[in-house]
Image 1 (tube, rainbow, N blue to C red):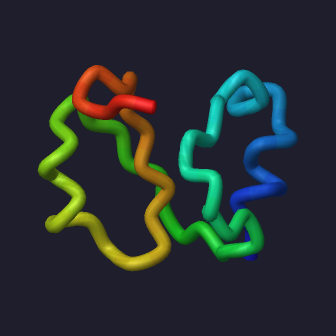
Image 2: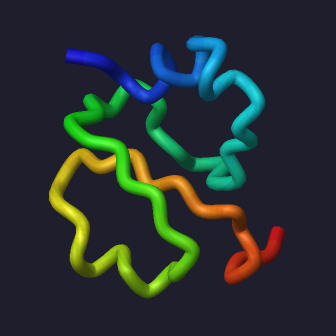
Length: 59
């Protein structure tokens, strides 16, 4: 099983910025989903690494 912190160490995902300061990067990731629609989160399975370009979010 792969954790978020392990995924973020891989070259493919190493430039991703985690904006959730309370994120638990020890969570297991079962699937990776990519969408440009932030409201799709309600339809994602548990333990999903959700990738979005971030236009719908602010810091």
